[in-house]
Length: 80
Image (cartoon, rainbow, N blue to C red; front, side):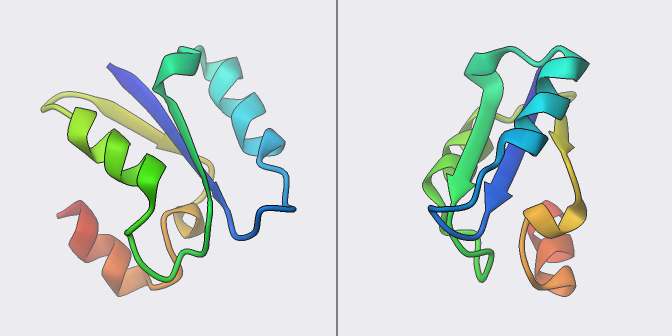
């Protein structure tokens, strides 16, 4: 399955640029997850929901590595 994860840091920011990319790739709307929260940790509702759905062989699209979080080492540890 293909999924997309987008994040913006504040509720007043617009994630549309990220969503357009996911749609262009052909990701089903049901499998696009977006949080409007800080990237300080991974305790974000949509990110956690996506994590519960991920299975071996799935492909996760993100617009940029910093959409996963602020701390590069934390991002690497999370994805391992």
